Length: 368
Image 1: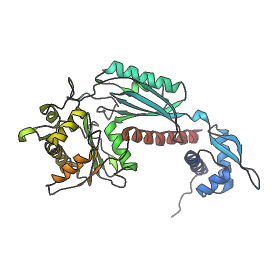
Image 2 (image 1 turned 90 degrees about the horizontal axis):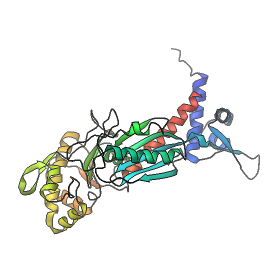
Image 3 (image 1 turned 30 degrees about the vertical axis):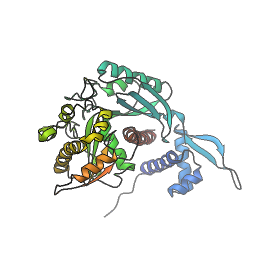
Image 4 (image 1 turned 135 degrees about the vertical axis):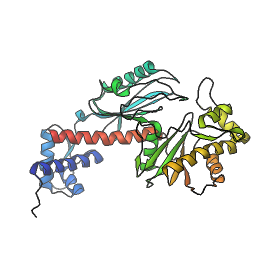
């Protein structure tokens, strides 16, 4: 059987990708350093650097090696390769940053919001942040974290009953299209948090787990075979209406537990975190753990995780972890762990955005 040889264009494209990924990891490199890092011959690397320089992707920085022997030139990406927009939409406002292909935050911006701002105010805030960043650096792609459910097919935010942060059916993709030249990806903050814990937190190396977000809002992310599972509409993990055990042993939706125990912020379904912590110190903790336990058992039954990660402003409290462990009575028990990362939602979105930006730069280099 005759095996077809890869074409010369394919080999060149592969070499160029190795060159670009090495430089993206290290910031600037000489051709000799790239050859040593990639294991590709220096003449082949030199050809790749020449092609990428001529096509306007790389540039000689003007810096030279020192010491014995012939000085080597350092190469890096040109500034025009741009950055990725990373933004989170929360009751605290819209916080945005521009991240370059080296993983450095090169610009930041924010706009205030508030709880239940509605679609128009949220769109104006996102527009303001994107505009400020686009004025400073070309935005090649965007990754958005939203504290609301997200429709998988459109990227629009979804209004479900008893959601504490309401922005209507905001369409971040449409808002950002004038500022971003490439792909725009939107997902909810709990899914991004789970990805961050999977990549560098307490769930590192675990391919099947659930991430339980317990804060002002309630949510969960399901990770199976290493991937976040979003479901047909993108609403996997919306646990607010899972039936569990309420005060007095009464069955009720999870979100109703906080209404029944006067733990909601006035005029909203948001959990009053300060009041909850005070009440737990006064004896509510076992009852709260029982309500959470009902949700966890449902997640275990339907997703078969190896680990339950407790995240969110009060979900990470050590006392809650102990109370849940004390109630372990099911034949299908799994381990619990507290989330380790600070601001995991933005960390997860940022990591994904850097990967997306690097892939885009490599694709465009190949097209040139």
